[in-house]
Image (cartoon, rainbow over all chains, first blue to last red; front, side, top):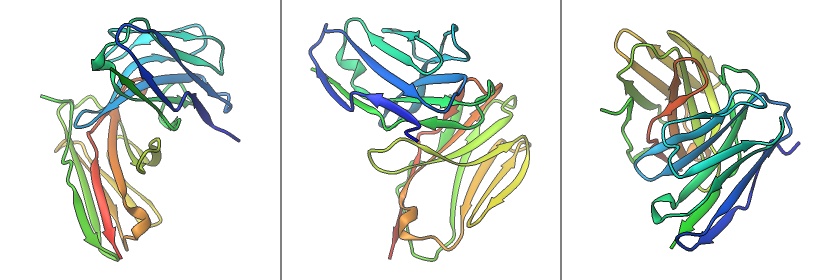
Length: 113
Length: 110
């Protein structure tokens, strides 16, 4: 049982390049989330999807887009990467719409140079 | 002012000690309160979850919520070296958006 799987685990981008972070969960959860984690800032919500077909902005959505491809998959896209987007990105999912128990992936370490 | 404040530590204790981790928050509308544990270079994992006020115990871990003081705590009894990690508090109004503390780094020395 894999839980929440993120790919890739590491990535280095040049400023202005684009990329998509992939996330898939095998727990049949309704809700999925993308967070970024920066030193001294904690985890900050970028976007979330309460159910298949819906997405909503979180605390720090600027510079990102998301796609809820199906119930299992939720991708995060950086259209034009900036050094300020250097961070560790976590995908999470939860069973209930209330997201009381979120399960996290292992993270993607992104460096933008 | 941040929604959730958490002392980053680091906190270092001897094995067997009782550890107290705390968070304060500013918005009285928070209803859901969680503690996550995060090992180095890993994703956070849920330790404890509490809805509204009160205490919850799970083995060596006890979570307390004091809504009147806007203060939550996590106590770890008989701390073990395997408890060495970063502990994140989190809270939510509706459950769809969580607000995390910055995390407290804990080291338990054998």
